Length: 355
Image 1 (tube, rainbow, N blue to C red):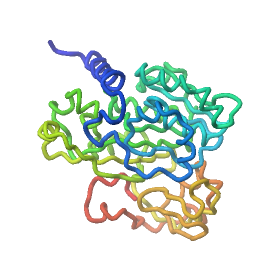
Image 2: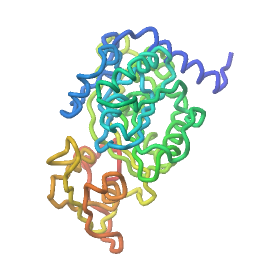
Image 3: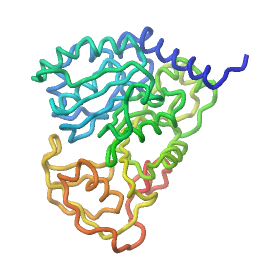
């Protein structure tokens, strides 16, 4: 029997629901490190995490810490929110004037999140919850009432790889983001396209390896949608200790990455030099002395940094603009901007942006 694309997608979603809703009872049941975050937790997040219910923390399956800075007053959309760990942290950071919408297709996971909404709001000192959890798929956010340009920030933690139609998901994210808005997510990447026996294996899919993004296909996808320049913020190697899973994966190499991408019409597909200088003036919680834009742009407070036009736009034309001063514009051009992370400079094609 040959499956249609729709039927195959439904089967894939059912497998993911079963894996996260019934097979996994806690993070201890995972067979790889793909869905186990090793990224350092920001110091100002730790007091918030201490307020969260044990059940919410125990059933967390993320691969990073995709909660960006400066969320106060923002509308944040968490795709694949699960039991709500990241959504609740974002809610505390967004404050009572902010709003966090969590989307998940697994009822068992979402039931945990909704059960603790009122309790967490009380613990945060809010008069009412600023969270809103919705059951549905991330490929059709319109069906969940999410309008065009309605979110300031979209976050996701090791979930986008699970979507049967990944390009549709990213198009939906682009649609719901406001101009200047940010996609900030952690997920699993691979150094090659994976064979069918891997992409269709229920355990490997559930462990976030079967649907891992091949670096170059991801770059092309982002460019098609309108993100010509995205940035790697952090990355770490994914380990697979199970011999049976290792045998299926062969020599494929996996990385857990945290990626940020801004919805900005001014971005180019290469880093261009306009002689611009950026100053971080401070004021962001958790970034009192320096602000990290990506893995090769760390802005020390009040120290001038020469930046390409794209980096200038990322810190000037977004919610970060009130914390930065950019000197210069794009009226003069000096050619390509000589800027790359160390790995890319040595010929690693997996770098996430041109800069």
